[in-house]
Amino acid sequence: DAKTTQPPSMDCAEGRAANLPCNHSTISGNEYVYWYRQIHSQGPQYIIHGLKNNETNEMASLIITEDRKSSTLILPHATLRDTAVYYCIVSGANNAGNMLTFGGGTRLMVKP
Amino acid sequence: NAGVTQTPKFQVLKTGQSMTLQCAQDMNHEYMSWYRQDPGMGLRLIHYSVGAGITDQGEVPNGYNVSRSTTEDFPLRLLSAAPSQTSVYFCASSYSTSTGRKLFFGSGTQLSVL
Image (cartoon, rainbow over all chains, first blue to last red; front, side, top):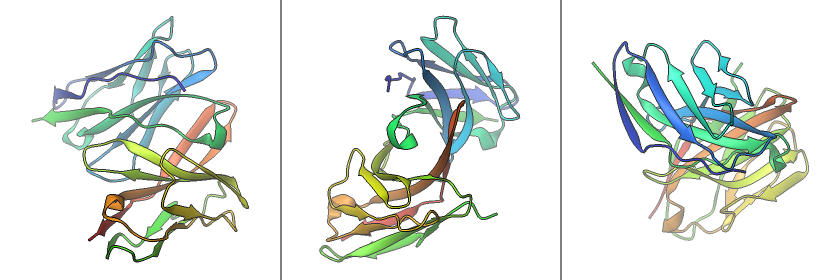
């Protein structure tokens, strides 16, 4: 699976959009970009994933650049409950065991 | 719908003791896995299973055993606990689709080895 690079920490004002970047310059054609988050030592929670096209669900939007070498997770109206560590993961659909490799992530602090 | 259930939530062991961390899922997922998370670190894969009767090693398997006799259960056994195994352990289950996969995590077991 390709490696990812994320900033270690970010701040965001409550009510504003949080834009979390992720670089994955070695991504290959069949690899997906996944985002998970972990709130205060709870189990990680799935947010969203995509292959090429931008994706949106009830939690967030995922913007993937045309060359697929980077992506941005957007939380449109961040709340204090969005304070968490956000993990960007790149993995192929044929990854053995269906497992994902979690790196260090970005610690997002949403401030009042 | 309980999802992924881990027991116990907290455990303290003495060096050399053995124990089993339990994990059960009720979503009929074929894939299950165990991760450990040390303070301030990401998750590291210990063992995983692609179905009943099939297991394989992850990134950090030493000192741990697993088995998968049923689709629902995936226990993690510590054979002889060491202080280096002090960590938070997460179990996850997942299914595969043509558009990727989602992992569903349990709430974790916090283990301290003295």
